[in-house]
Length: 271
Image (cartoon, rainbow, N blue to C red; front, side):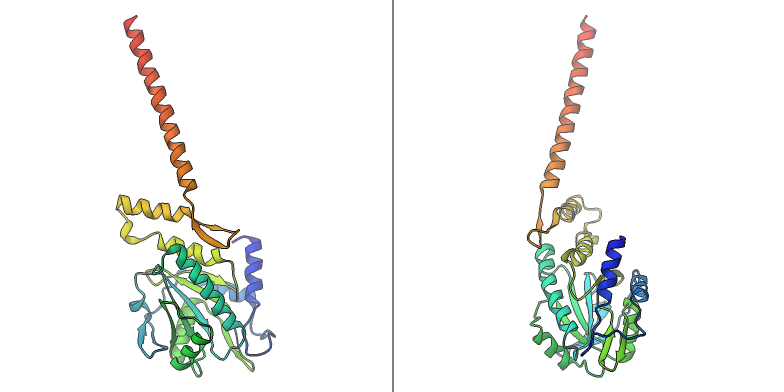
């Protein structure tokens, strides 16, 4: 991470959630929060139990094995930052699925205020933010589970008189339940979410050892690019075409030189 990126991340971390004032809790240190969050990379999350907003049981590792997962932590009584974070994440998820595939990854939003974030409250929160995306569930659980998964994710939060101050992050989990990336801020640049997901989606275990499937994934990985003029991702095969054209040119030159050498040697033999 460059110095500029680090500064941007730290500024994002300073944007804390609360039910009223944005005044920072004295226990919250952005640099330390960043260290803890980044140290979580490589952690394997537990197979924790949740209840979704419809009352269905969820086992995190079992239900989401084999596909990338994005985890967002919120509390439903937050009236400002958590709703804004969720709405921005929803917009980014739509753009990411447009580029990577409708069922390329899943999303869960977990309520960490266990006294308030019941399945009913999580469902109401999702409806208020108008999030009804397929493959996105809003989950509730108990305090012990929140403490454990927060440690796994490197997620920091503190209860305050106003509600909670917390780290604004979305965590990307790979197919094996390992923390792969962190995306910080109430709002963020689309590539911060899509690039790590793209690496996971287009490196499918099933493609390993299969020439055609592996080639298709490689082409998708390198040709799915961000267009800053539109703010969206698109499939751009120009790099692949240029590379193929360059390879054809090199092979043509080698063929021509080889043919000329063969002709010259034959001519020398007849002299």
